[in-house]
Image (cartoon, rainbow, N blue to C red; front, side, top):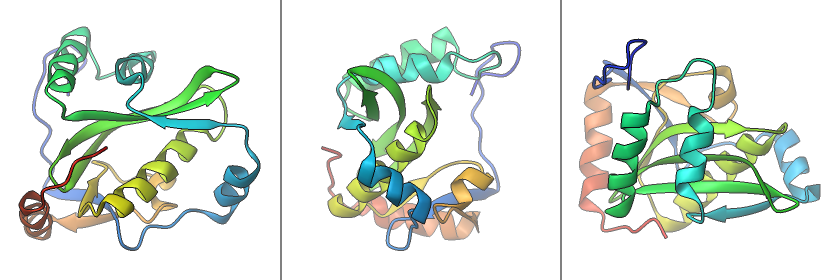
Length: 172
């Protein structure tokens, strides 16, 4: 992550926040929205646009240097996105890094209400179908708690990663 000066540092908390793939929750109100919305949800069609939109905030940790790094990692096939479109316009999404059976959520954005939540619901369902072991979401927030996010100790996190890295899983 870049700090307020633009210096890039590794963020490595002692407690990790994950959403368990086997027991995640899609809030009832979001299920209703998903059943009636005109959103079109896609994967990996405009990943760099998603990253740019995530960086488009008054205060952001996603600097131009990080965007360039994400482009290089994307070219290697590790960065993936879920995009939400409304009337052909990108209105929300999220991106992260997939390594074998682990997905590391980096950031999300929403131009209209519920778009980023719909992207997260799609990501969770996709990761479950593909048999991913872990979704690391970095920080606990009220928004993520609705989906079942929980904080775990570092040793437990290492156990999840050990299992995830043994799985030969492709995001798409």
